[in-house]
Length: 185
Image (cartoon, rainbow, N blue to C red; front, side):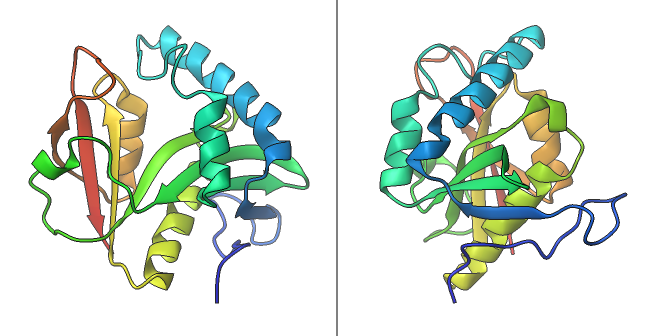
């Protein structure tokens, strides 16, 4: 059974049933809201001296392509878009040079984007857990992600979700490396 909606997990501190987060495939109608959250995150990242996301990345074309390919998922609560995550089996450029614990297919997280006003509310964790369940549903037991070395929040978040650092790669002409993370399910 394919997961178009998933809401079996409730964030810490909330009563089951109080938080009706639905994760569904994103649509073109979501693009304006997605880009608003991207802009909010860019501003928050710059305040933290994190230059992972710049004027060229991520762009609306990235999210449009994700929607075209059916790999962008939106988290919403009562119709309000809270965040998105791209989940596919395509590793970033340079993944072949990383010493992963396991070779073969894996779900890969790209462009995870949750409104900065919702940090520490469980939305990001639910998106990752959705990705883990999607991997299991596809018969995969492995999930990967990468994030820029300046993105201390995302690195801490991935570690909190049980990911371990696997190596480093260079992407998008950035002067510093992206850290690669993995999790066996």
